[in-house]
Image 1 (tube, rainbow, N blue to C red):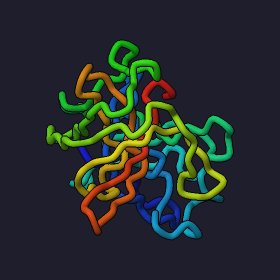
Image 2: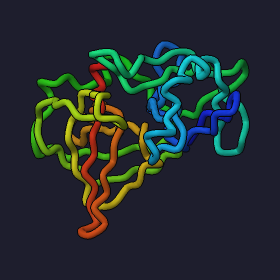
Image 3: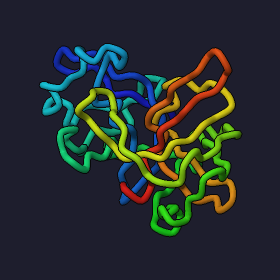
Length: 203
């Protein structure tokens, strides 16, 4: 179920993104939906994040599915690039939306270099062919140079595009959740994508 934050008080709508899963009754999506004009950092709603609370979140058909309930400040040392969305009364999520529970989450000591992974979209489509490039969690800039997040590095043998940001990345060997696809760097010359995945056990 792709989603986006609707226009609010003069702020343009956010880019379209994927749902990561559901935790404690809230939908979890990438922080991307708190911003707009994703490829123009000067347009990021930095000074307007307070307006984003309680903003409507819609599906691709334009129907309201919920409202933004909470998110971290990007200036926090342990910034988590996720948004929690309160579902609108009566809205039900599909069975493809993954429940994020301790038993379904991979710990850092369960992750190994070279292990293959796949992306599961909430429409049921699976994208295979990812490989973990290093088993350790590293820090990377996210959107702006002074915003840092913890990530795993993963490489896919195809280009992905940023519409997949937010999608869950799953370990092939254990079927546990590695984390949220949060950054994609497509290499159109060789048809690959280096991805940065926010660790599931940091949520």
